[in-house]
Amino acid sequence: MTTTQPRKRDEHSGHEGRSFECSSVREWRLAPLPWAPDALEPHIGRRTVELHYGKHHRGYLDKLRAAIEGKPEAEQDLEQLVRTSQGHVFNMAAQVWNHDFYWRSLAPDGGRRPQGELLARIERDFGSFETCRERLAEAASGHFGSGYAWLAAGRDGRLRVLTTHDAENPLGGGLSPLLTIDVWEHAYYLDVQNDRGRYVAGVLDHLLDWDFAAQNLGRAGSVAE
Ligand code: FE2
Image 1: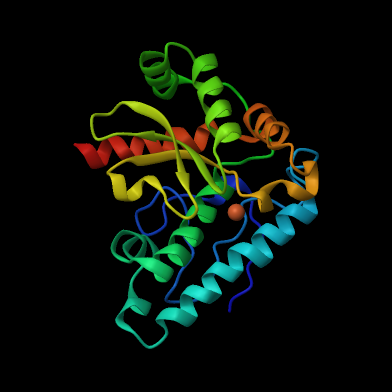
Image 2: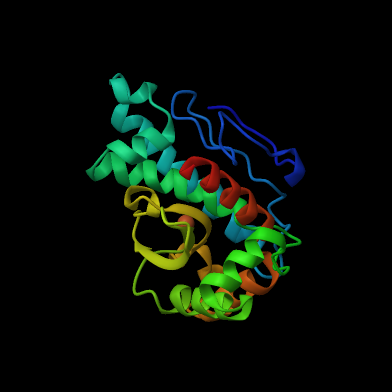
């Protein structure tokens, strides 16, 4: 398996036509973290990132590869697998994709107020950015069990907050994800134990990358046209 080094966030741009870089099943390669493992401190600690990326995320890719080795699925790209598979293969493929997306939803200089078209759409659909932030906080903090909270755009172009259980994500529901917050315990337990609300507040106020959301919104718009 290829080992890759963290890059500066600005070096990331379209990969195979996407607005973010996905891991490759065919090449058995995990997409690199967009920042150094300690870059999110104090909100998410280095050890959490090292375990989350190096053990959990990598483990999902290893299990996926083991499950499809020698089969036609091994030649598909990750998003294709997420959209077409079921059961164990879906769970592993979606977990790889979800984590690729989660890392890019976070930035060391995140948490800044969105601007431009994204802010206008948030204000249209939620009333204000503060209400959108509150909906995300409630969804992520209140979600029962493992899963993710998402900001996503529907086919009608409207933005919404939703949560998904376990490995599920909005791709199958015809939604275009803009941002996600991983609320599996492995995302925060080392840092704040069971205080998920503290982790969520740290992500929302200091880490969430609204520039990434704006890129995804642009892509969602071009897909809908
Ligand atoms: Fe996770």
